Length: 187
Image (cartoon, rainbow, N blue to C red; front, side, top):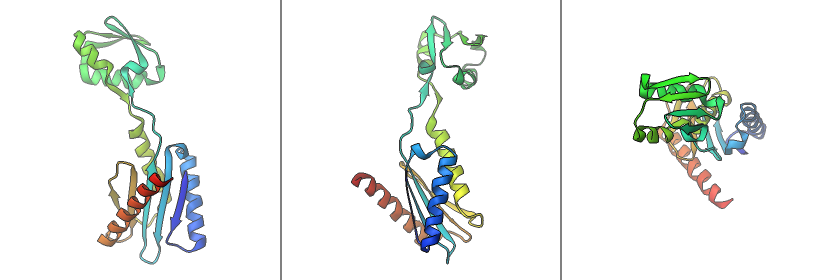
């Protein structure tokens, strides 16, 4: 994970680099984040934090954590059992029953069972995004309560300030996002 902080004096930039690094390490995200860029303007109390997400495991589907046995599913990875059962009960109601700790009975048609096997039980990206947002909240100064998220397929960018977010800061955030995207191709 690469961390770069600009906009403040040398001490402030180094301090925020350490805070970013420590925070994402503490919440276990260093291996999932490619780069972090933070821009600080203390005079106008504006902070822009952009996090580029890197490797994320693929979503876990029903067929990844079960084995079909006719009209039953045998759970092969117990840690997903609660999410799997909740998903199936939510979608199919009483037509899904837990026969034993690791066996689920299905009163479904064959085409419905085929559909079941492709349902997503757990998407690590959803969990990752909430954890990244938690990290960002820990890093940004407490007084910067006005937040403006910038959409991106590669990660999360947040502008934070005490004041309403001006257009110039939105443009600065877009510039940062472009810079991060181009550095990804160059490295």
